[in-house]
Amino acid sequence: MSDCLFCKMVSGEIAPDKVYEDKDVLAFRDVNPQAPLHVLVIPKAHITTLNDVDEANAALLGKMYHAVKKITQQEGVAEDGFRTVMNCNQDGGQTVFHIHLHLLAGRALQWPPG
Ligand code: AMP
Ligand code: ZN
Image 1 (cartoon, rainbow, N blue to C red):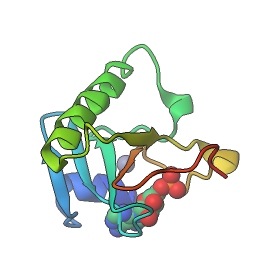
Image 2: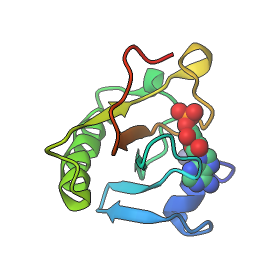
Image 3: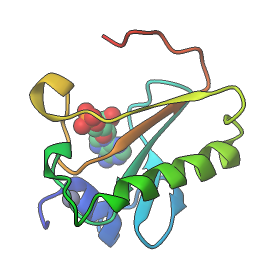
Image 4: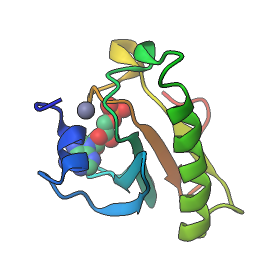
């Protein structure tokens, strides 16, 4: 999608602070980090919200979580632990409408989230 911020990162029009990339997935540091490590993991294919996941694209979610495993090992946070969050639409607090997984680590995180 030409007007999507995260599609622009996939195409290279905007350069993200990249931490991981493969054929299907891109991961980069959040510009407004909420923890010492705050990475966004996105599918390269545009999916607007979690409501748009279907039979044809659902495998990308598994690939995003496989990337999480690689990134947490790479960043050295796998053993201490981490949190993944995906926000959907208004009540979920979604502000960028290309699905993304927040990977938060590097401090003890509160529960429940606000
Ligand atoms: P959400 O509110 O779940 O849609 O998350 C969107 C996230 O994108 C927020 O945590 C923002 O800080 C982050 N974000 C927005 N613009 C950028 C950018 N240019 N580079 C990296 N992260 C961004
Ligand atoms: Zn997009």
